[in-house]
Figure 1 (cartoon, rainbow, N blue to C red):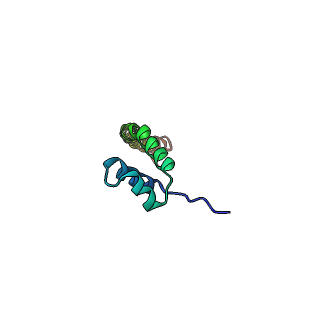
Figure 2: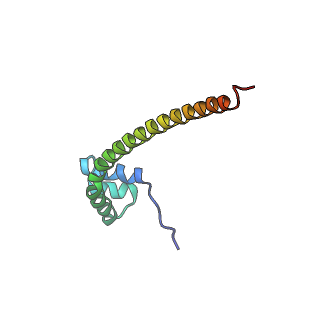
Figure 3: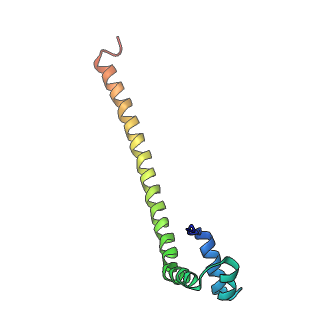
Length: 101
């Protein structure tokens, strides 16, 4: 029994781009890489169907980066407020103990 070959995403993308750009014709690509034409057709169809996701993902990442930046600013502000509250608490407790005597 023969083992099925697996292909990386990079390999699939490179072969499909060669096909789409007309660098090599489909038959030549299939012979060169020992692929069935149906497989290359499936890869091409999947590539063209999912192409819009690339740009949607880019926008999504930008939104996530902005959200992370906002959260980091909030953490910084809350850390400063906590430090000030601790210092105020230390000062008030030392005053209530008789000025540290």
